[in-house]
Length: 509
Image (cartoon, rainbow, N blue to C red; front, side):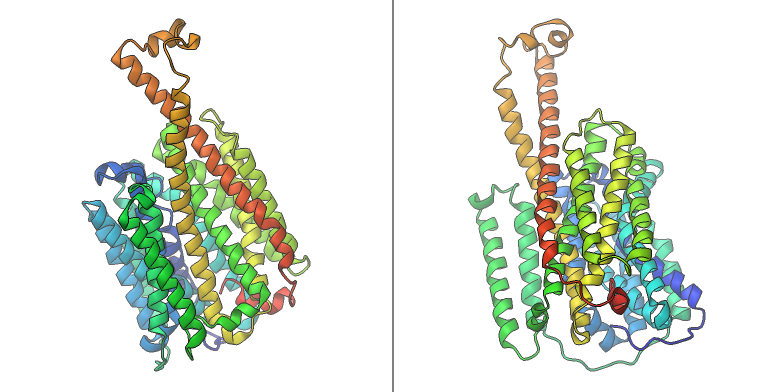
């Protein structure tokens, strides 16, 4: 996507700050709303599974629109597209802040995702063009920190804004950032020449419909009793049919949206699988921890955000370490180490109860951040190490698509499992609650959970639900651990490729 890098860019420092603000603003919004979800749920009259559309709608829209960035930049000019994306994202953020119902919120979050999609690849393109080739590594390191740390620090900032102001400020905070970014880019970013390129709109449309229908299937399945609902059957059918049409079209058209020849590169194909797994673990674990801390451990929103913040520290430390050693150590070993660390942390989390100490929460957060940091940079390097230059733009767009798709599907699946397992375990526990159970007939327990009174029965049911939810969370952590564990042997399918330095330009591109 980037043109030839200029050796000396005027006001490069200011331009870099503006570009990084755009990257962080977009990356931050994937998770900044997490800790505010319980407050938004009440304001928007939504159920727990419905409110997660606030997260998934944004991620899906960004995932679908990211691959179009290169075409739009060529047709409109890079500066014009960047400015349109920033102002559109800022306006959509204001609309999210004033939303009065769940459908409005989901619609405005979709708009946020559409306008936010070009911000990350465009910021990378500008950085690559602003720095000489020998400094591309440091430029990509800055960009990578924004992309990875933004989603992890989001809950902390979201918690602070929700605690001291209102959940709506989670979206209003983008306004001053957007204005500064817009003014800076208007003043210091140079325009590129426009090109009349063709684009495979049919392929793009069929893939977009397939992804959107799949997300609706996952989001609404639990609510509508899965295949007992005609809507769910229709959404799955539409997803499968349009994906089949997309595959057939891709292999038969002259200039497809995604060139199938790039999948002959084994590293690239395996790398797409791994970045999907990273997407699942990164945001799905955050989506689980936030309600766990607030609903089961009764943490205030600000405290929950502060407990989640150290994940970002772990990721930054890991990226600094990887940047220094990646040229001396096989990237596959770093990926394997990152996966092993992630598996270890998720295994420990299967033993979590609401009595877990704050220190343990912070420590495991740092360790999980370290694992993701060790995964992301070497994985990005080795994925593109052997991919030919002609496929790099399409490849990086597909890499970003798979990361976002993994995040969106991961959130939907773990939330479905959480809801279903809570109900299943609740029904199993209720079988043991009878008037003849000795544990319920003695001392303080009998006074609090007296089954002969309505208040006692309600209190007992609330405690059973709480215990069922704890077990359901444990099952979700175990599910993610098994996914990461199953991915470990596939590391050995990767080829080492060329030196890491040769792939430096492709890292995170």
